[in-house]
Image (cartoon, rainbow over the protein chains, first blue to last red):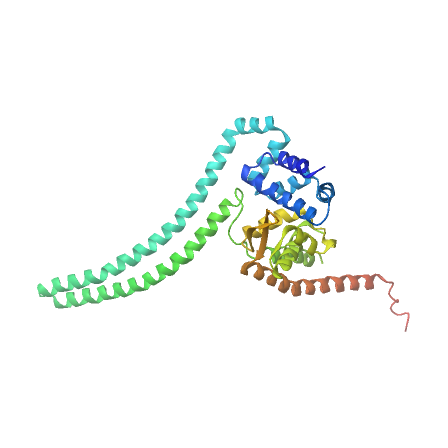
Length: 217
Length: 119
């Protein structure tokens, strides 16, 4: 098999993927063959060192997130079955997908309403300050000195609490923005490849293996 | 070897190779120990995964009139190899524990001298 044949078979085996993804994969394997040829091999020898195009395609598909992977594998096995499932399964998969989307959206909404609540609380308390002063002046103007003083005091207490709350709301916004990002990434994980940093996946695997070893022991 | 575990090892190996300097696909295959059996069909998804996790950065450059992709390790990538090394101390401790437990079991299975026989 020469380079063209190999790449054509790989392209055929990846036919269910988006065009960009196919081009990228084929480009990678083309580079691998070219580098071997530059190393002194013939095209045939270079291709013989690579995995069979079907195995190469399987490895690429196996690395897709769960939803596109299932779609691609079903399509590959039987195109007619795939479309039958898509059409007849519509009353099942559509509500499930819609529910998943709504759950994701509700999560984001809850997080941001929490943030909004904190800001409103801070704003309300801060507004209490000037309000206290105004009511105090009104009380003084009407000869109600003790009432005015109490209003001034409570207004200032409100303002102080408001400043405190403002500080908390700022910190909470930052933290919740992070939570919101993580939530969105989690919800998207089954559908698209993650672009965020997957912290310490390697040690994670080792930790799992290690835990199993301890449990078994 | 467990597939998940091997995946982790290969990831660490590729990052280790790249920590010595920028490299390209075929060179990485040649640099990783052959006993790990790293092939193109393993390397390609692995590189994409590492790129997705921003552990490596990719650039295309011309080489002998064609484009070749060069991979470079990032700060996150270095952190990940560092974490892998540190994790090994723990793994070693667990290995010793398992080893000793098995040795002790093997020892207890040997016929014990009967109590009272000595007296």
